Length: 318
Ligand code: SF4
Image 1 (tube, rainbow, N blue to C red):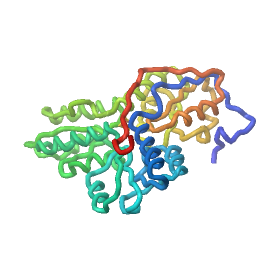
Image 2: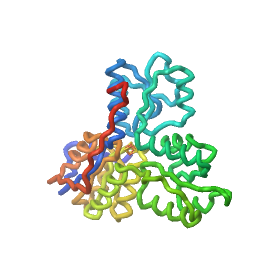
Image 3: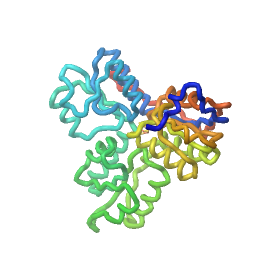
Image 4: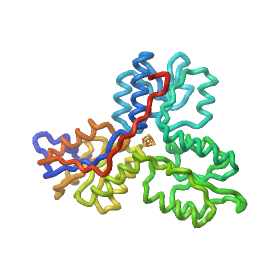
């Protein structure tokens, strides 16, 4: 195993300058989901059960588990006498039906912006559209949204997938997207869809959420001024991977790390300015741990855009 930066006691890998991107870290949907688990623990006491990871971040999940949250994969793994929370990524209707059939007390931490895409899926399906869903196969959000209208859904992940779509010529076609996709890459797929289906219907408002868009914009503008960009986030975080891609497309070496222990000394060779950001499910403390581990001569913040979004807790936890 290669040595990790954090394990080299007495040999600080000082970099001259760290520039921290803003906006970064927790979005409004993640803040709400984490607050829901904490409020449920306070209200009903531990344990509370959570179906899937509440957000895709190892540290956040670990901290909530330490407080008494138990993460399960499916509804039938939760006991009938404890609350069950649905994660921020949303669920297919079949999951809701399973929980109702067991008469579980459920709390829905689905991000309101994901719920909006679910509503669009139902509306388009009701109106007889075939739905092209631009997203990542197997991602919790994609599974949940596609589950709203499984008979009408067609998943595409790349421009090449558009050419392979098999939709009857007499069908109306609409598209939806996962909320955390890369803005530029998705624009290319949408363009290919429009060329293939000139009457393509669009969602009323962009599905890629404000938080994914803003974090990508900050990285896009910051990366050209850095020798290296570190994205703090977990491997199963879709929006974290998109941030790495955005930096790479700008020509800057970029890596996704969970924390200081993942930093490789060789990445820092010749890197005097290091950019740092956190994905939408990364707590600020995790970003600051990475900044501290870099032992920078100076730390600056680069703010691409201001954010001021907040979502209320569900009524039963307010
Ligand atoms: S990234 Fe966007 S859609 Fe996902 S939880 Fe955050 S605000 Fe909601």
